[in-house]
Amino acid sequence: MPRSRAPYAHFVGVNVKAKKTYENGIYAELLPTCSSSISTWPGGLLRRNVEAILALKPDAVLQWTFDPKLIEPLERVNLQVIGWDCCTKEQRRDYLRLAGYTTNRIDRAQAILALQDKSENGLRDLFAKARLAKPTGMLVIDQVKESVQVIANSSQDYTLSGTVNLAADNSGEWWRTIDAEQLLVWNPAIIVIPA
Image (cartoon, rainbow, N blue to C red; front, side, top):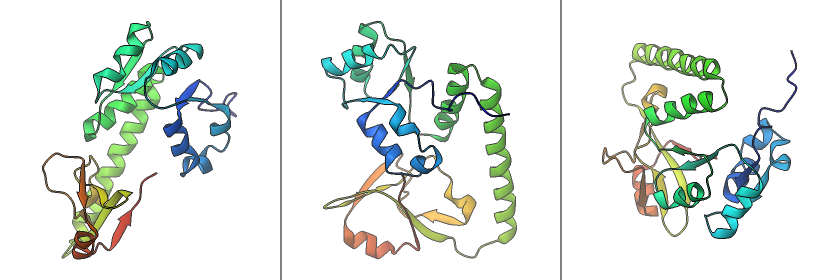
């Protein structure tokens, strides 16, 4: 049965950075009309941006919780704010649960989580049988400037694919900054560049 609305039709706006992520990544291919149909406001929560958000009349505003100063201005003007924490595996699962409750599609969120669990267990079984002598080294590069910012300790379990994140150090820190020399020393066979 065809859908009557686009899956993002309930979004009234996003910040400029989020929209650029859509436009410059695979999302633009998956949802080609999404970018042109969603309003934007400048990043940050300056007074004019809170006013821009208010003008969109959202039912709820999704906001990262890493900095409480980002939430307080929104709540002060009586916007309903849903805080999203980052970035453990369980927190990522919570994103789906929260999206299900917010959109009244709990069944869909549970189905997606069940599919993830089934896929993950299938991969674990497959690679347990493969008994790789040595996993393939990989890096997730988040930013390249004078130095290289890599995602070190994410919620992603790369061992499921027979790889190991060379930057992981079990410190709990999401990112690490390395220099070009360290990149050459590690010499990853796979480099992942996220959206």
